[in-house]
Length: 192
Image (cartoon, one colour):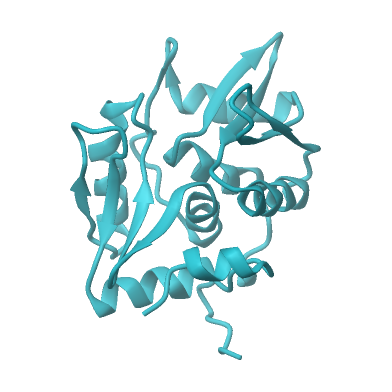
């Protein structure tokens, strides 16, 4: 058993802002009649279940469904408390990154749950291929918290921030905390 880091996601109380990590990945936010909803399509059910737990911890009602392609989808209930996030993360109908956004431990955990994957001795945090203007600001935000990534795949269908090097990986691992209790999660979780 590893020791809980002072900076890990488990040491920070849940908040609505945690869910912005979903938007750093391929998540979407839509405004609906004075309220908003966050949603994200993920590659595996364990990811949807862990994100649903984070949504519930933040005080919202989660829903897990399937897309037409039978891929897991997790979303929040429509809630007026999400309007601020929707306003900050969109310009018109285009997803954008707020200028001062910095991913804290729980935001990094949500991002890792939504789109994290190992790559040999490195780790990838997936980006939204449909929102290329968010890629560089997200890389900058990661640099400002001391995890300098490399932006990769910007011309392909799987853009990501690659985190490499022992110190950077250790910082990511310390922030995101322990993996969900699922065997599949363990193989997809960052480690040093």
